[in-house]
Length: 162
Picture (cartoon, rainbow, N blue to C red):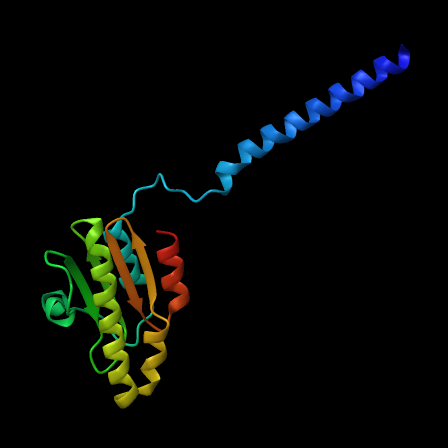
Protein backbone atom coordinates (compact mmCIF):
# COMPACT_ATOMS: atom_id res chain seq x y z
CA UNK A 1 0.00 0.00 0.00
CA UNK A 2 2.91 2.30 0.76
CA UNK A 3 4.24 1.88 -2.79
CA UNK A 4 0.86 2.64 -4.26
CA UNK A 5 0.62 5.84 -2.20
CA UNK A 6 4.09 7.01 -3.36
CA UNK A 7 3.19 6.32 -6.97
CA UNK A 8 -0.02 8.36 -6.61
CA UNK A 9 1.95 11.26 -5.13
CA UNK A 10 4.46 11.15 -8.02
CA UNK A 11 1.66 11.09 -10.60
CA UNK A 12 -0.06 13.98 -8.82
CA UNK A 13 3.22 15.98 -8.66
CA UNK A 14 3.86 15.37 -12.36
CA UNK A 15 0.34 16.53 -13.22
CA UNK A 16 0.77 19.71 -11.15
CA UNK A 17 4.15 20.39 -12.81
CA UNK A 18 2.68 19.86 -16.28
CA UNK A 19 -0.23 22.14 -15.44
CA UNK A 20 2.16 24.84 -14.18
CA UNK A 21 4.24 24.62 -17.38
CA UNK A 22 1.10 24.93 -19.53
CA UNK A 23 -0.07 27.98 -17.56
CA UNK A 24 3.37 29.61 -17.97
CA UNK A 25 3.35 28.97 -21.72
CA UNK A 26 -0.15 30.41 -22.06
CA UNK A 27 0.89 33.51 -20.12
CA UNK A 28 4.04 33.99 -22.22
CA UNK A 29 2.42 33.65 -25.67
CA UNK A 30 0.97 37.21 -25.70
CA UNK A 31 4.39 38.62 -24.83
CA UNK A 32 5.83 37.10 -28.02
CA UNK A 33 3.00 38.15 -30.31
CA UNK A 34 3.32 41.38 -32.29
CA UNK A 35 1.42 44.28 -30.81
CA UNK A 36 -1.58 44.89 -32.98
CA UNK A 37 -3.69 46.82 -30.51
CA UNK A 38 -1.69 49.99 -31.05
CA UNK A 39 -3.21 52.13 -33.81
CA UNK A 40 -1.00 52.93 -36.77
CA UNK A 41 -0.19 56.63 -36.99
CA UNK A 42 0.81 57.09 -40.63
CA UNK A 43 1.41 60.82 -40.26
CA UNK A 44 3.77 60.27 -37.32
CA UNK A 45 5.58 57.57 -39.30
CA UNK A 46 5.95 59.90 -42.28
CA UNK A 47 7.24 62.67 -40.01
CA UNK A 48 9.82 60.33 -38.50
CA UNK A 49 10.96 59.15 -41.94
CA UNK A 50 11.44 62.75 -43.04
CA UNK A 51 13.27 63.76 -39.86
CA UNK A 52 15.36 60.73 -38.89
CA UNK A 53 16.41 59.05 -42.14
CA UNK A 54 19.50 60.38 -43.93
CA UNK A 55 18.97 61.40 -47.55
CA UNK A 56 21.41 62.48 -50.27
CA UNK A 57 19.87 65.98 -50.25
CA UNK A 58 16.94 67.79 -48.68
CA UNK A 59 13.57 66.32 -49.53
CA UNK A 60 10.93 68.62 -50.96
CA UNK A 61 7.19 68.13 -51.01
CA UNK A 62 6.27 66.79 -54.45
CA UNK A 63 2.73 65.73 -53.55
CA UNK A 64 1.17 68.08 -56.09
CA UNK A 65 2.97 66.24 -58.90
CA UNK A 66 2.48 62.73 -57.52
CA UNK A 67 -0.69 62.00 -59.48
CA UNK A 68 1.29 62.44 -62.72
CA UNK A 69 4.12 60.20 -61.52
CA UNK A 70 2.03 57.11 -60.83
CA UNK A 71 0.35 55.54 -63.82
CA UNK A 72 -2.49 53.21 -62.93
CA UNK A 73 -2.98 54.52 -59.39
CA UNK A 74 -6.60 53.90 -58.32
CA UNK A 75 -8.74 57.03 -58.26
CA UNK A 76 -9.13 58.93 -55.03
CA UNK A 77 -5.95 57.60 -53.41
CA UNK A 78 -4.34 60.20 -51.17
CA UNK A 79 -0.63 60.51 -52.04
CA UNK A 80 2.06 62.34 -50.11
CA UNK A 81 5.44 62.36 -51.80
CA UNK A 82 8.76 63.93 -50.86
CA UNK A 83 11.78 63.68 -53.14
CA UNK A 84 15.29 65.01 -53.71
CA UNK A 85 16.19 67.02 -56.73
CA UNK A 86 19.43 66.79 -58.62
CA UNK A 87 19.04 63.25 -59.89
CA UNK A 88 18.99 61.59 -56.47
CA UNK A 89 16.73 58.60 -56.00
CA UNK A 90 15.84 59.48 -52.40
CA UNK A 91 12.05 59.61 -52.05
CA UNK A 92 9.37 58.97 -49.45
CA UNK A 93 5.89 58.07 -50.67
CA UNK A 94 2.81 57.53 -48.52
CA UNK A 95 -0.44 56.39 -50.11
CA UNK A 96 -3.78 56.03 -48.36
CA UNK A 97 -6.31 53.81 -50.08
CA UNK A 98 -10.04 54.45 -49.90
CA UNK A 99 -10.66 50.76 -49.40
CA UNK A 100 -8.66 47.54 -49.16
CA UNK A 101 -9.46 46.61 -52.77
CA UNK A 102 -7.31 49.61 -53.88
CA UNK A 103 -4.15 48.20 -52.28
CA UNK A 104 -3.07 45.92 -55.17
CA UNK A 105 -3.40 48.84 -57.62
CA UNK A 106 -1.36 51.07 -55.30
CA UNK A 107 1.37 48.43 -54.99
CA UNK A 108 1.48 47.96 -58.76
CA UNK A 109 1.67 51.72 -59.44
CA UNK A 110 4.49 52.13 -56.92
CA UNK A 111 6.41 49.15 -58.33
CA UNK A 112 6.02 50.55 -61.84
CA UNK A 113 7.27 53.97 -60.67
CA UNK A 114 10.31 52.42 -58.98
CA UNK A 115 11.10 50.25 -62.01
CA UNK A 116 10.86 53.23 -64.36
CA UNK A 117 13.04 55.43 -62.15
CA UNK A 118 15.52 52.58 -61.71
CA UNK A 119 15.74 52.18 -65.48
CA UNK A 120 16.51 55.91 -65.84
CA UNK A 121 19.15 55.69 -63.11
CA UNK A 122 20.87 52.80 -64.90
CA UNK A 123 21.52 55.13 -67.84
CA UNK A 124 22.19 58.42 -66.09
CA UNK A 125 23.31 57.75 -62.51
CA UNK A 126 24.21 54.09 -61.81
CA UNK A 127 25.17 54.88 -58.20
CA UNK A 128 21.48 55.48 -57.39
CA UNK A 129 20.30 52.08 -58.71
CA UNK A 130 20.90 50.26 -55.42
CA UNK A 131 18.55 52.67 -53.63
CA UNK A 132 15.70 51.57 -55.89
CA UNK A 133 16.66 47.91 -55.45
CA UNK A 134 16.58 48.27 -51.66
CA UNK A 135 13.45 50.41 -51.27
CA UNK A 136 11.85 49.85 -47.86
CA UNK A 137 8.13 49.08 -47.92
CA UNK A 138 5.48 49.13 -45.19
CA UNK A 139 1.82 48.26 -45.58
CA UNK A 140 -0.50 48.78 -42.62
CA UNK A 141 -4.25 48.96 -42.90
CA UNK A 142 -5.10 51.25 -45.82
CA UNK A 143 -1.59 52.77 -45.98
CA UNK A 144 1.36 51.88 -48.17
CA UNK A 145 4.63 53.67 -47.44
CA UNK A 146 7.82 53.39 -49.49
CA UNK A 147 11.16 54.91 -48.54
CA UNK A 148 13.92 55.01 -51.16
CA UNK A 149 17.23 55.89 -49.53
CA UNK A 150 20.73 54.68 -48.85
CA UNK A 151 19.88 54.74 -45.12
CA UNK A 152 17.73 51.61 -45.25
CA UNK A 153 18.63 50.60 -41.70
CA UNK A 154 16.96 53.66 -40.15
CA UNK A 155 14.00 53.46 -42.54
CA UNK A 156 13.44 49.77 -41.70
CA UNK A 157 13.65 50.50 -37.97
CA UNK A 158 11.00 53.22 -38.25
CA UNK A 159 8.69 51.23 -40.52
CA UNK A 160 8.96 47.98 -38.59
CA UNK A 161 8.25 49.80 -35.33
CA UNK A 162 5.18 51.46 -36.79
